[in-house]
Image (cartoon, rainbow, N blue to C red; front, top):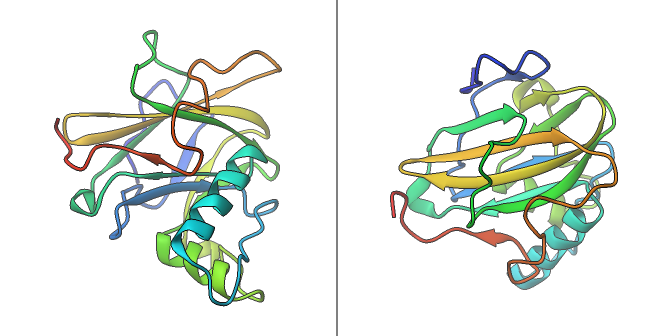
Length: 178
């Protein structure tokens, strides 16, 4: 099981939460995320697709870097008292009480094939179970770790503006620990 702080009674993780082998971390609402882009998609198209999904509150994708392969992701409910300056944020809707953590390979297969779901085998995909609702996601790095917090929100403003990066996906610096 992933690293979940003890104060997160409403959060349950099934599987290991890590940065995938391509250096990406994603949280996806499998009920609302539309994965297909084009049979011959390009990386700019895919990144724009991720940005559109973020705006629709159906997916949150960040690039940590290929050297971060296997880095543990610490997930918690509730934001830290001090919001990190260099984090990434978005909203995500949880409709079925679960968010999935697909790999970049899962995301690209769904992008290429219209009949391929981003979560083909839920039982083999890492899951983050939280009560339904809309959540603000914050992701930030410290040392050798990626941290992600989820906080249920109403219509208040995000703690960190979602337009702080280039409109595609959040890219953390190339090296962990900087």
